[in-house]
Image 1 (cartoon, rainbow, N blue to C red):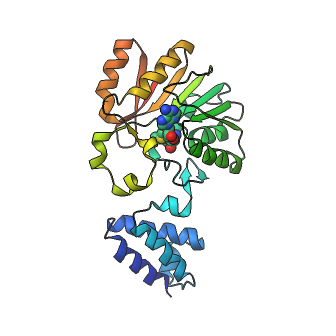
Image 2: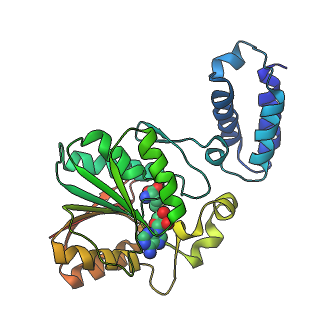
Length: 270
Ligand SMILES: C[S@@+](CC[C@H](N)C(=O)[O-])C[C@H]1O[C@@H](n2cnc3c(N)ncnc32)[C@H](O)[C@@H]1O
C-alpha cells in the first residue's frame, strides 16, 4: 500500500482525537519509527509492506496512548531516552531547564542531585555535558528508577539512582539540587488532556490543592541547611505564591522565562 494512503488513514482517524497538525505529526513519527523514513518517502509515492504495524500503532493512538509510550522513545536534549508508563514523558520545558543549568555552570565538577528524577532525563543529560561532575537522581517510585537505570546504561553515563521520599527522608550534601517535582493541583485536572490523565503516572503530576508548593518548601528547607544552589521547574500559576513565600523566608532567587515567555524556571542560591 502507498504511504500516502496510510497517511490519509491516520489523519482521517486521528483528527477525531487530535487537531490535523498533531495527527499528521503522529503519522510522521510512526513512519520514522517503523521504517526510518521521512516525509520525502510519502512525497515520492513509496509503498509499505508494514500495513499491519501501522494499523496496530493507530489503534493505540486512537485509545489516547501518547506516541512516546508506543514507540518507547522520547527525545531529550539531543538524547533518545526510553520511556514507558512508569515515568513521565520528558517535556521541552525541562530541556530548557537543563540548558539554563549548563549555561549557568559550564564545566561543572561538583555533586548534583535531581529530586523526582523519573526517566533520569535531567542527570543523564547533564552527565553528557559535565563528565567530571558526580551525578545522582532520586525518586519515590522504584518503578521509575528501573527506567532511569536503563537509560543511564543505554546512554553510557555514570549516574547513581536512589529511592527516596523527599517529603519524609533526609538528604546527603550536594553542591547543586535540581527538581521538576509534581506541581499540578488536583483542581487543574479538568484543564488537562485526557491522554495525559489516562496514561501518565499521577504520582509524577499531582500535588494536593491544600499545599501545592509542598515540594519546593521541603527541598529548600533541606537545601538551606547545606547552602546548596537549587534549580526548579514550576508552573507559572505559582509565581506570585512562590515569590511571597521566598521573600518571607529571605531567599535569594531569580526566575528564568521558558520559550513561551512564562516564568517556569527558578534558581535559589544561599
Ligand atoms: C514531574 S515528574 C519529573 C520527572 C523527570 N524529572 C522529568 O523532568 O521528566 C516528578 C517526579 O517526582 C517523583 N515523586 C513524587 N513524589 C515524590 C516524593 N515524595 N519523593 C521523591 N520523588 C517523588 C515522581 O515519581 C516523578 O518521577
